[in-house]
Image (cartoon, rainbow, N blue to C red):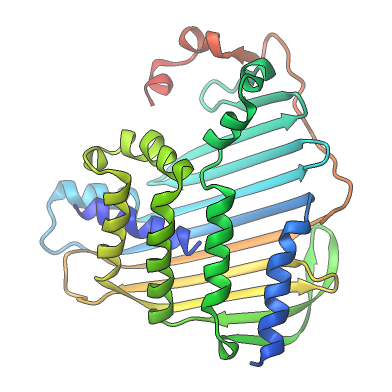
Length: 326
């Protein structure tokens, strides 16, 4: 139960995750301008620090909570939608164990670097082209419709007094020094709880997210195997009622072209009953940087050979049993 609450709170934090009237409008324009980006690079890093009250917990419960007590991860993406090219690199550290994932898409060619064996899994285009729309739907965690609805809720949540325009700041990025304007958004506990309830009304309707939950979360977590997706969302709402948002700060740096080039999110939640056993607080930090926006990109795709490449039919032969079972 304690581990379930910790996981629910972690997912909740991640979901909260993607002065005057003019300031609010300016920020909204920058947020909406993302849709005009077709190529560029972005990277992000996050940390989740969980505060645990061990009083009353069993040794097994403490062991499980320690596994997800401190989490951190990072990712980098270079993409060009027009040329259908993208490279994604992800890293996550959970309980001292690191997990890597690299995905390469170069027009008709797709491959994935497999951890443990250090080889590339080649995904034939013929397999995808049987139903490309179904493939994209299956591999998109959250549908575009849901993202649009959540963005509208997020932008509609803010009041004029919640958005503060700061001074001009010069940021040092991989693209060089960039002149930016700082926008800071601070929301209170009631606003975040309202956003969460809106999410609870939207997320259960997303078939993509439901499929992701069934395949990747419910199937691999014993304590969730009897939970439907709708029940899981309801658990998030119930768990949230036991906590309050102590701090929610969002800072965006917008360049002279109106693009958000840096975003920093800081969230701190605390248990209403500080003496309860188990999870009593969480601190979440996310730092996202974007550069080379709508500029020509360079891609370092791996050279695939017979020696470093596997096909799907080779997995049972070449992959270690431990990796297959996972």
